[in-house]
Length: 103
Image (cartoon, rainbow, N blue to C red; front, side, top):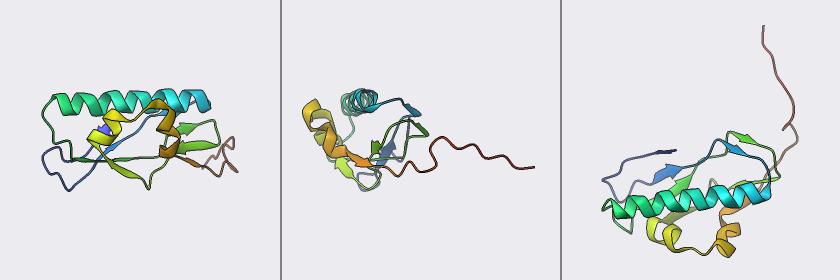
């Protein structure tokens, strides 16, 4: 899933995923984001177009995509899987399994 202005090079596209089950799944999902970046380049977007990330909606691990990181579509499209770790950050999962109800 992504949001953002596709035409403006200065405004980043924001990509992310809904669910991450474990660390291996996080790396897999970054691979899906990479495929999305490649597709946008194939559609003719500038390789200088910025890409940032939103926090995973449902995360069951202690790491997430780094919402403070911004890279170019080119850098995302050409990044080696072994380097995906630099796009993650440690999460505070203190309330990860808590359920809140309002009445």
